Length: 235
Image (cartoon, rainbow, N blue to C red; front, side, top):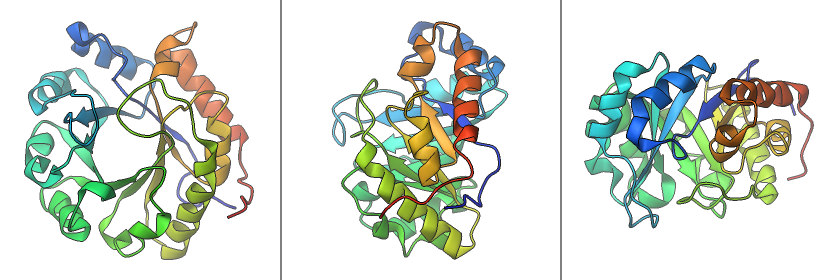
């Protein structure tokens, strides 16, 4: 399977493992490490058990960054929060298909606010859920863990769905990024890349790398590139 959407894999850290007492400095360190964007995992304590970042925290961190921000809204009512996270400086907003009663309308609203729109799918959610909103979508996120906690183990059985999403995107001819999030390490990124992902979220592994964040970013990018050309994955 050929990945036609990107020649360079994008490495995007989650800030969940960061030291929240020095979040501005953490953002600077991530930028200096060569990341492509920074992801903010927004949790409401209802859709997922944890509670994390409000828009004011993200807005305070935004001036410290030289790369874009994306907000991954793991919340039950994303429509009520979209504008606040765009105003906080998030150029890309990810909503969960499972949380949106009118997904097409929600994605259109994100674009109307001036941000890029994205939809996330939990591991159990089939790829076909997004088949009729591709024209409203700039990115699809295939969760490779169940959302809500950092440090979970990668679920390899999601890879056939990643491959299916890759085929849907390529056949659409639209410039849609395909992101994966959950348990991404030097050992798991190859499988996700081979299945067709081109954007990779890493949190706990990146922060724990013995040689630092820059070395982690380089290792992830190199390993993803070594997985090309992408091979067919049985659907």
